[in-house]
Length: 261
Length: 261
Image (cartoon, rainbow over all chains, first blue to last red; front, top):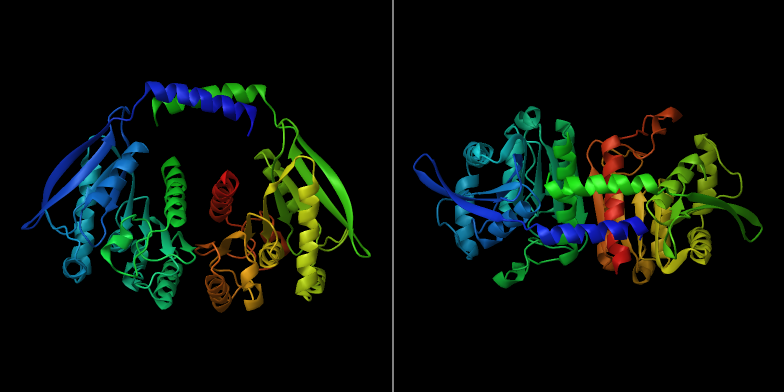
C-alpha cells in the first residue's frame, strides 16, 4: 500500500532468499510414574540464543501428525515448541471409542491430569534453547481443556490458548491459582460444548478475576483447525478455513503481547 | 528474535525517518432531508492512488474528538476514513440524558437509522481516494449498533466492526440482506448488554448464516476503547488498555482479510 512497504517487502524477500529456517526435531522420552511418555520438540536451528517456549497439547486422538505439524509451525515462527504426550508412548488412534477411553482415563483425576501437563511444561523449560521465563501452552480439543487445567493448576506460564476445547470451568478452589492469561477460540456451532458450559466457563473466569478472552466463530463446528476433521465420519467435526486462519493469527498477537513483557 | 528481523527493523527505522504520514482532513457537509449533517474525512496524502475506505460511527455522544481520533488513526494505517454524522451538525454532548435523547430519536425508526448510516457510506465511497469496492465500517457504543444495522440493511460493504456496541439481533426479515462479514468486540462485564441480548445476537446471526465472530473480553466494561470513559462519572463505563489494544489489533487483521480479497 505504501511505497516504503513495497520496499520493505523487496528487501525482506532478498533477505529471506539467504536465510532458511532449519527446523530441527527431537523425540524426548520421559516418564510419569510407571507410564512411558514420548514427546516431540521442534525449533529453528538457524536462530541464535534462547527464545520463548510453547507447549502443544494434542487432540483426544493422541500425539499424532497433526500435533507435530503445529509444533513445526511454531518452530517456524521462532519458538521452541514441545508436543507433550498426555496418554503414553504410541497411544495414538483414529477411533473415537479408543480416544474417549484414553481421554477419560487421564481426565478422571484432575490432579493427575494437571500433573501430567505440568510434566510436559517441565520438559519444555529444560530445553537448552528455551527462555524458561517466557512460556505459553496451546491445545486442541482435549488439549484445549488440558491447557486450561494447566492454568488452573497455578503453573508458572505466561498464557494458554484453547482451540475448540471443551472449556471446563475453573473451580472456586482453583480461582486463586490462575496466573496465566487465557485465550479461548471456540466454534459457536460446537455440538460438544453446550451454551451453558461456555457460560459457566466465562462466569468462573470472571469470578476468578482472570485475564481472559474468548473468540466465538459463527457457524463453526468442533475441530475447526484440523483439515482432516471431516475424515473421521463424525458430523459434529468440521474444518473451517476462516476460523483456522483467524484463530492462529489471534494466537500470534497474543504471544507477541505475552512475550514482550 | 531472528537476526534478519533485527536488520529489517533497522532498515524500517531508516526508511521511516525519510517518510512522514501526511494526514489530511476535510469537513464534509451533506444532508438527510431537512437535517444538516457534517462528517469528517481523513487520509494520508503521502500515499498514491485509491485505497480501502472505512466508515467510523461515533458513540452516543455524537461526532466528537474521540471519533475524529479514530479516523486519524485509520488514515495513518493507510485507509481513507470518514466519520459519519448520525445526529446532525454540532449535535455533540457529554450529558447522558441529551445523548440518550438524540440516540433514541435516530434508533426509533430502524429504516431511517439504516438510511442515515448508508448516507455516510455513500459519502465515503464518493471520496476521490477511495476504492469503492473495498469498504468497511467500524463503530463504538451506539456506533457499534449502527454498523450492525448497516450490515442488516444489505449495504454493499465488505465488513463491519462493533466495539462495545449494544449488539442488536438481526430480524428474520433482515437475514437475507447480510453480505458483510461481522466482527464484534464485547466487554463481558458490559452492564448495558445483558447476557440474553448477546445470545440473541449470536443466535440471529447463526440463523442468518452470516460470517461473524465475537470476541468477549473478561472483566471489561462498556466503552473499553475510550480513555475518557471514566471521566463521565458513570460506573458502567471503563477504559481497558488490554481490550483496547487487542480489539484494535483484531480489527486490523480483519481488514487485512477483507481487503485482500
